[in-house]
Image 1 (cartoon, rainbow, N blue to C red):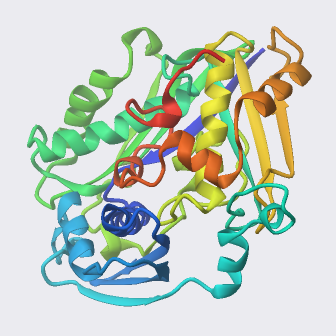
Image 2 (image 1 turned 120 degrees about the vertical axis):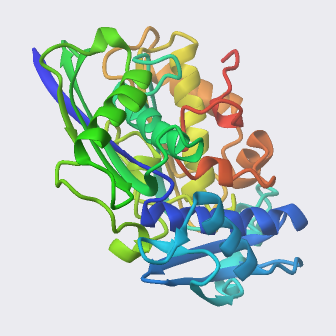
Length: 379
């Protein structure tokens, strides 16, 4: 049976991703000076203005406005007429300390208070999913893998002046045709990229096809039936926060598996690792990837659930979609035996107190090299 599946990615200049990047930049700045900082940072971007809020408890003193301006500069926003200028945009900061009610459960877990376990509690209740499959070398679904590579290449050709008329904002979609659950070809590619006003649309379409798409997508996946929609509206000059508002945590499907796997609903950016929305999702990906990498399944989805103030997960669920080579119950037992899934256990195992989060913000939190939750171990 044939079917189509589509995933989306966005460039680092997308308004929501701008906000994610500022929030993760603030987080890294605190962790660089105080590894025990508790950070929950949210950013809103609008026309000519950035608003940063949230709850932060730390011994470090950070110039949040300066961090934000540098982040906006890093992305390439320097023109208030088309998107935003890091030098002149207004930045407002309204940050308070973490609620003492939350700290009660995080500092000492319910199990610690009962003398069962010495550990911090989860920073919130929630469910987290991890996923892996053997469609790509990085064990990610092919649609989101290609979408991220295309979006990243859009930024690369802009920053290296390979296509010198591009601006930071952009979006990508990739539709893959599957046959019997195996990817066989690219059906459709959609690219919408911000550009300077003087460029001819036909030149842009030619450049994007030759210097982005054909540089990224394997030739064997493209054929005469592959459809291309490049800037289908015909014009994309006004972009970034001038064209649309941005908000931290609004691209959770882009950040994970492109809709190919379920999502628990919690965003990642701006949150330190005591927030299991982030740390447990990273651990779930790590375990799912290693289940596939070790040959226990060709496809695997894992769910963890947590309660605020409770250290250990309430439940663990594993679904291998019938591709498992050992019983799923045995896989669950291996997880319980090998891994400490308390917040402290995850933080220590994946070394999550380091300022590593800006590198995760864009083009997906999974499938990248040099991240501890992407390592393959004997499992």
